[in-house]
Image 1 (cartoon, rainbow, N blue to C red):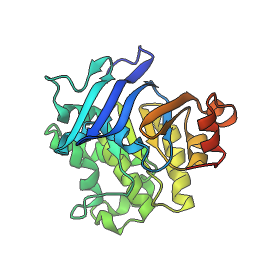
Image 2: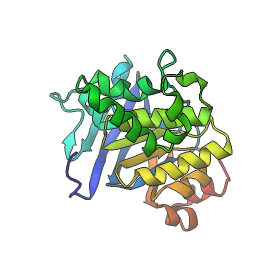
Image 3: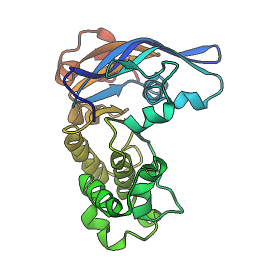
Image 4: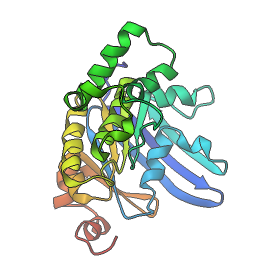
Length: 257
């Protein structure tokens, strides 16, 4: 783990993302404080997920995608020429909208899979990693007697917590969540939200959500994106009660979006 002595874990500096000739993200500069939850809100198609995916270099996998500007992790540019994208993804974990456990694997193997990819796991450590990761996501008591069962036998909410366990098992420093509750029922959503609150003790968390109530509940800081541009970013309470920009207020009060 790197020192969290500096105030910001992650900084975007004039981030632009192009797909072919279309510019999806325009000059976004945004700082993510250490051990906080930052929510990125905005209407569909405004660039929220595009920003999130640029933070762990997922656009590298898209042929016509081009990312410019800087993304600094502990003041180091993750797009610098010498930086290995795989190493970046180890430090910046990602949880997707739909739970995506590996279908051919058991619950246990799902948790340990990312760790195994890094080729640095001792047999004796495995059980400990599985147990501690599942405990972190409050899933251990629900699955400890069926670790060898298929992950697909779990409910949607349990699958999403399993995916978060898989992410934390690798011990990242930042966890990105792209609409992590949109496929879940209210009870499962509540469990994930409680979990997000606990995770920030150890990680810097960035969540993209279209659900403004959720952003208000789980985040410390909220950034509002519109048409690929950052309109406003501030302490969540201020964004939701006294935003500085009229466009933010219009979105939050439901006048568009």
